[in-house]
Image (cartoon, rainbow, N blue to C red; front, side, top):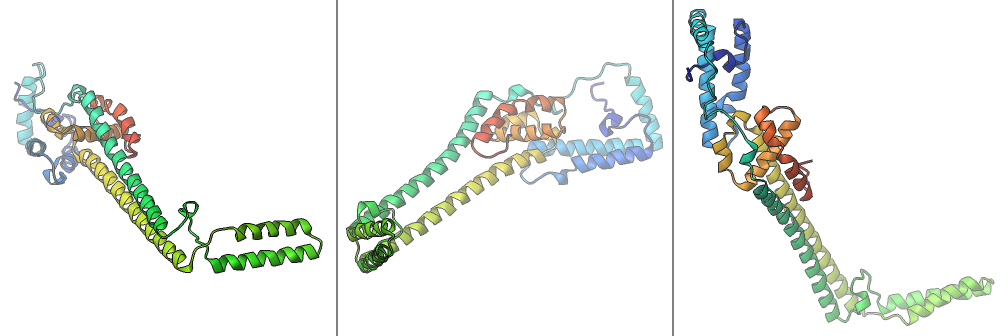
Length: 306
């Protein structure tokens, strides 16, 4: 009795279904369970399960599409209806929440978050190193401490021209009676008079050092952004991979064989499936574990668990 297969349940049709209804159900299920639909990298155990499921679909369809074979099968099926239903075989898909160890999943999420933080720390460290090296180079050519972060280095001819201009404007303003405004330009001229200047050679060298530092900062930023993009793409691909697996392929033995990190990605995939109402009851129960993990996923900036 335990080996009896209910072909109507396998094809998900009513025992009174017409031949056209059986054909339509068979074609729809083939789209879901055809082994050729499995994504690259599908684990061998999951692939074997799908292949067996596909063979069972074909057997059920070949039996029910033939009127004589269907009549003989219906008679056999009636003889078994009085018996209690057989317990589900071990190969049937069942994902129990206890498969997922919350402590280890939190550790996996923390490791992903730490990787994200490390990339940012490395980027900040490189920016600080560029800034410190730039300061040392500027000090080496005589740039004063207050001008180390400056983008403009005044030369003596430039400063002299500014002083003369301010004095000239101040004289004109005094002459037309705008003494208060003339005092402002006079003060500016005096400040410029006592401001340090750099030789044209030093200013040119300083500008070159600053340009090189800016190029290095830009390259560091591009490298960091590239790292971030690759990392987020990797995480998204792992989640999409598990979303692409049919729920029936998620056998208990397969889930236990996954790394903690892949179990985390699987849970995030289940949570997204849960939001789309595409899971059976046991998978929805397991997906509840992903709620807390999804909050952790948001912490390391993936935006995949919200």
